[in-house]
Image (cartoon, rainbow, N blue to C red):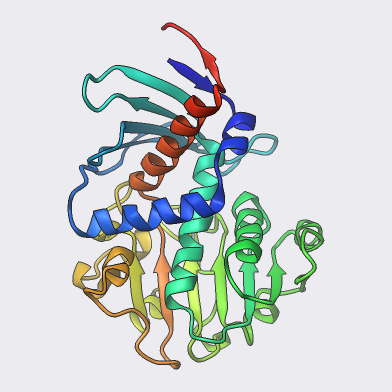
Length: 310
């Protein structure tokens, strides 16, 4: 097996390559050529560990273990490992850090939704939150979208200010409403188990991405979901947690459009400049699968990683 550290994964995972691979993966979800069982979980009194297996023709099989412990103070709230298995023999091929992969694939999937669904000419964005995902969204937003101005708001004002210093386009503001008002794109990157915005703050035609996961609640208001054009990675997002999203419970899965369907042109994306579009991300095992395969193949070609024999 090949062991790949976080530092090695960071060197090997190119955002533009991952964006292209994710777009192919979203299409595979919507054409139903993937085998992705629903997530399962084990609980402790402080958090959960989720299992996320996936298989797709032409790629080696993956299983991710990800822990979600929102109360962590000195460690990240999300930590992960990914194992790859040979799709022909079942032999274990690689064990790699999955924390960075989870961060990057989540943020880049949000950027895909922005590229597909934000209205033409969108220039101003808001990021709500100041943690790992907020930072990843900020960096990928600058790299992968034409957005020119980014306002950041967080309950932790000092962290928001520090985040804003990362790029010239960003500034920290003192409230969520101040960040969201006038924004064409809003990225919710919190661990909140309660809604973090009010519908009346939204500009007509805004696009919202939401990556928070903290059942039985969540950061995205139900009335915003019900009055918007809704997009998901997969319709499994409508299932009960841990497979699906707490915020989507009770809604008909037909109300959501998969990103792959928009990419395949089988269902419409944005229908007017005035409708609100929402991308509710659950984090899909496809995203880990394509990212881990990219990392592994590049590691082989560059002779990186440490071989070990379990």
